[in-house]
Image 1 (cartoon, helix red, strand yellow):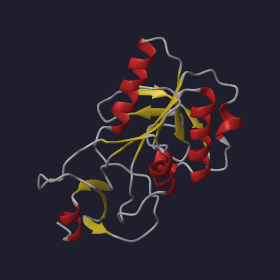
Image 2: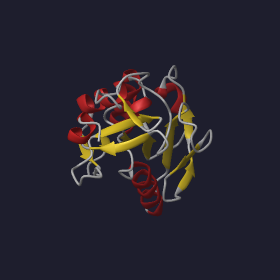
Image 3: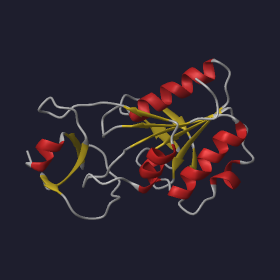
Length: 187
């Protein structure tokens, strides 16, 4: 793969996005690449600066806030690659900054995250990634009916909800991957 690329790996909940990100980090480090692992500070499910997959893989990460300029924040770090988990929570400007870092440093920036929210609308960070990424990779998982899951259905008191705040941090306690048909028919 050529260098200087912005790569968006996306999927619904339970599509192994974080596990894939952490496996990529391991593989790159085995080849003596210095990998900078990033995550938005808003994601505190596994701890303040920890990225952890459901299968138990975990690693420390540098966190950033919505107001951070990533070019400024990362200029003191040494790295040959960046891996960003939960990239949907990055701002459009931060995605643009990551694109510039990839080009200027001639490194690859691998972004892992959700494409759409629980209402089937794009997150701002994901939208900008679709517009700017050199490569899009869908990580698949399936609905209980057997179809490809494309929706991150949100549940409250056992019922699907289709309105509310776009960002509510949660895991399998709040979300389930579903195909559009099951989500539409509230199955």
